[in-house]
Image (cartoon, rainbow, N blue to C red):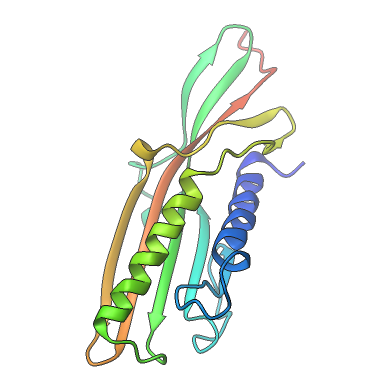
Length: 178
């Protein structure tokens, strides 16, 4: 048994790989290079990985903060507990070596952002579980927070970074509440 958070991050990695790599034509400029759980740790090389996705439990930029932590949403008499678990997806479109104009770079970033949003919001998380804990509610639009920042600059070295933060509810059954 791996724990529900690991199962959810593995599911997100698989789902995003399918939607952003496998289902996208090889010559599509907004096609993702890699989807990885956690940091990239130098892989792939920026020349090979111009568009990358990282899946995180919680928000790696808010470590040590208390404003965005897992919490119990409700507990039922008889022993089930529902958690609101926090996750984030970080995307980067490092368009330095490919020489897009600002308009082309913005189009790529906008397409990527839209594809990630759709992939996250359309996922039902059916069957994602660990032991007696399972996903009871996937990502909802009111819980999805998205930010996109443009870095780099003219004439042709654009760098877009995005972060998607969201809650996923899990229910743990068979917990005695004494």
